[in-house]
Image (cartoon, rainbow, N blue to C red; front, side):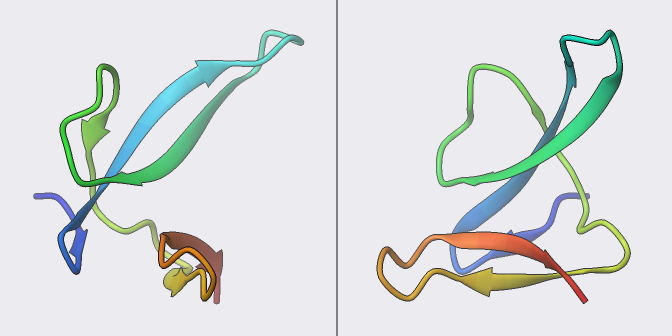
Length: 61
């Protein structure tokens, strides 16, 4: 199941940092991105909306 917010779908993907650590990043998109999978809202986060651009983002509770 994937989380959607006003037409935006939440995607996640694992990226490798310079030190070799793997980190999961989350992003919203209206279309299917080249990489990343639809995912649920992670626990401990809520959705905020940028007032200037109208883009949704995740923020900690």
